Amino acid sequence: MTETRPRCFLLARQGRDDKEETVEDHLQELVELARAGGLEPIGQARLKRATPEARSFYGKGQLEASSSEGKSLGATLLICDDELSGSQVRNIEKATGMSCMDRTGLILSIFEQRAQTREARAQVELARFEYELPRLKGAWTHLERQAGGVGTRGGAGETQIEVDRRMTRLRISQLKKELQHLERVRETQRQGRVPGLPRVALVGYTNAGKTSILKCLTGEGEPKDMLFATLDTTTRKAWLGADDETGAPKQALVSDTVGFIRKLPHQLVAAFRSTLGEVRTADALVVVADAAHPDLEEHLKIVGATLHDIGCGEHPRLLVLNQVDRLTRPRRLDMKKKHPGAVFSCALTKDGIADLRDWLCELIPGPPRARELEDWERPELLEQPS
Image (cartoon, rainbow, N blue to C red; front, side, top):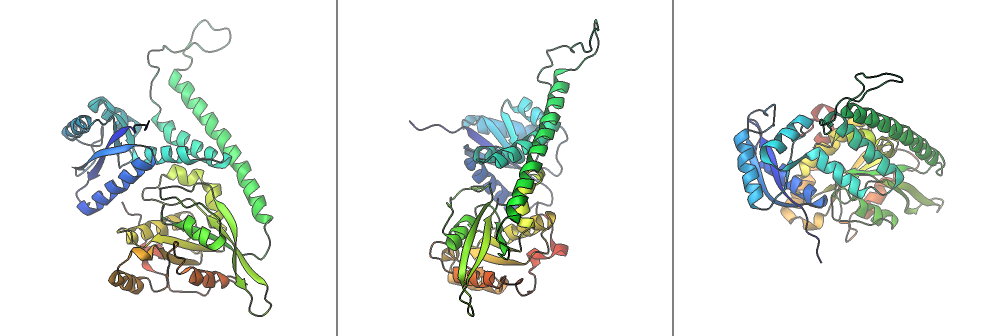
């Protein structure tokens, strides 16, 4: 018997300066996120509003119309593309009679479903607690203040919400200590690797094909067509060929990392510090992008901005435009003009993988040749898209 997915209705605000096409693209990505989170999106609305409403982010009439449409289609959950405060979520739920979740909460729920290892589960739990801490609400308002103190006959004591906040902060402290320990373990593992082997990190927008490239290079990895399929960093040894003079094998360590996305929650960036450490400590980066995606250029800017934010702006890097088999010939020629230094690849047919291996070979014994940066890599041009 097929399990029925909870139905949801999606909302996005279009400000005065926001282009309609941009908001529609954001909504389409929100559809993919909802499906990745086990939900069934059955409708969406683009709500025009110059500035957010302080109490409920959207206008009262907009919420009434959207919730009525959603309920008529069987939706029980509203998902908003923007990050909301705790009070805004509660006001939306009160006004619509439906549950409400923002984009950050949805991404966190996806990470919670996908986390497998101890480290990933701790990272996601930390991000969740830090996200929830300012959003704790008085769910126990029916309780009076508890008396506090030894030998007292009465007193203020703590409310339940104060207890919840104290316990949440305690758990956050415990998780940070656990992740610090796991980060030391990861650093010990890095130091124990064979000296002289260059370390390369595969980075890029989520679902761009990083795991597919890893499998082409190392023979290991399980590619999946879904957002955030990879949470735990996987490091494997890639054979790049034989040295022309000595005949000795040339090898590199290649790490598959968590994907980026627009409006990536800062709680996740902070919590995944040890995982992203594989990116920061790499000798070079291979930026994998879906060449056939209509938002390719925006994805590249988001990746460039995220790498700059986590301190990887100066790392040598190679752009790999994957899935070029889905491009028409004119589109491919146009892309070669725009990204002349990129490798054009197809993980299914392994086209372009030899060019990628040649570039990796330049890391042995030293860094690759300097090249001119493209616009999406220049710090002065990097602005996180809305």
